[in-house]
Every structure is written in C-alpha cells, then in structure tokens.
Image 1 (spheres, rainbow, N blue to C red):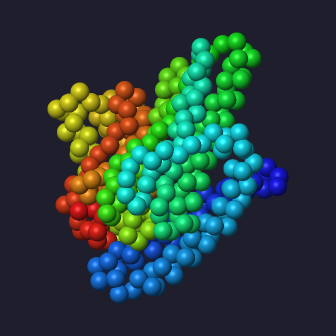
Image 2 (image 1 turned 90 degrees about the horizontal axis):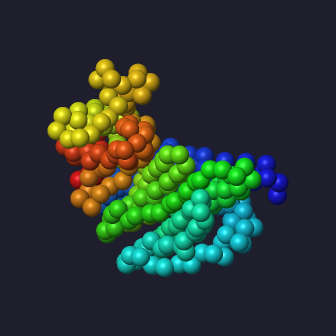
Image 3 (image 1 turned 90 degrees about the vertical axis):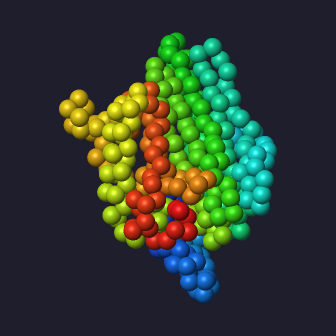
Length: 298
C-alpha cells in the first residue's frame, strides 16, 4: 500500500462523522434511559451503523501498526485501575541524552463490550504517540547534524473519572525546546451504553456554545479580581486577535467525579503559558435548560 493511499485512509478514519451520527445516537440513548430503556434494540442497531464505518478504516490502520514492529514490540501492559473496564499503560518510550529527552506513555482501554469502539480509541492513542515519537526522533537527528539545539517530548494520561456510568480519560502531550507547549485531549465513555460522548451530544442544540462561553468569561473575570491569574479578555490590554470570545463547538471536556461538566483549554489558548492548561467547572444550573438529560451531567 502506498504512503498516499495510507494517508488517505487515515484521513477518512479521522473524519468519521462522530459529531453528527454518533451525537444523534447518544441523544437517543439519553432519551431511552429516561423512558425505561424501551427502545434499546433500535439504539444498538443505529450504533452498529457507526461502528461499521470505523471498522473499515481500522483494518488499514492495523496494517500500519503491524508494519512498525520496532515500536509495537516495545509495548508492555500494566493495569492501573480496577473494574471491568480498565485503563492500561504501555512501557515508557525513553530517550536520555545530553540535550535530548523523551518519555512517552501510551494508554490503552480494555474491557469495553463494544469492541469496535475500544479498537478505534486504542488505535487513536497509539497513532498519537507514534507521531510524537517519530517527530522527536527526526528532530533529534536533524539537530545532531547541525550540532546545536535541545528538545524534549513527553506524554502521559490520567483517569479523571471511573464509576459505574462514566469513564473519562485525559491525555497530555508536552514538547519542549526554547519554550514548552502542552495540549490536552479527553475521551469520555458511557459505560452502560458503550458509546463515546461528544460535547454536542449532551445538549439539545448549539446554544450551549454561547451559554458555556459566557459562564467561562464570568469565571475568568472573577479569578482575575481575586487571584494572581491572567486571561486574554477584552480588558484593553489584550491584543484583539487574542481575546477569548467563545469555546469551540467540540471544545475539550470531561465529566468529573461529581458529575459536573469541565471545559479544558490547551496551554496558551486562553491565557499566558505560565497559566498551564486552564479548566473551568460549569455549574449544572447554568446548563439545566439546554441539556438533553441529566444522565451524565448532574
């Protein structure tokens, strides 16, 4: 298979319309739960349509993974949490040299009844970390040739919530050179219905974007008053192009142990770098009128 074809298949896989079809499925699941699950059979048939689309592209991605045994053979699984659904960690990929340092961990979810969903998530995790590792190695070799520079690459994960209903897993990735930059990614899984939740799927319509954004701006203003914090607000000091106006429709999020919606931002996204990766817990009473149900966000 040529590189071009492989890249095309990867692109098709990453573009599976989760936020459309799956959001619709999630909303059905929420309504089903509120009506004593009388239509569960129909829900799972609809879920199968999405799963089939994912499987086609996973075959191609598996070929890519299997063609890199040097990377794959390094993996060793160690359980880190209990329960039927587990999050596993792979062996660390480390580089320790004078000016070059890497410590990359690959998470894996195990125990979902929906095998297609489990494979798609785990393939995504592997691909993310393969990309980080390969880019680091390439940059390191280039800097060695030039005889200057130093870089670092790090990744890891954290189980944010693990209860009977929800599994939320956060992954972080940091690159360092003259400065450092950290990005966060989250997956939140409905254990009972075996589906991956998206932010749009939790709400009746797109009004959540403005509702959440207004609350976050209000929280930012309060924090600036009472704490040693800085956000890029419309305060006369921030460049117009940097001012935070609203969240992305698919903004990073997770549901915490208390059933609250948490919105997350990458480093430098809404604040100076020293602020790290800001998070905001959104009060449920702010969201109550626009939630599909209170099954997840309470």
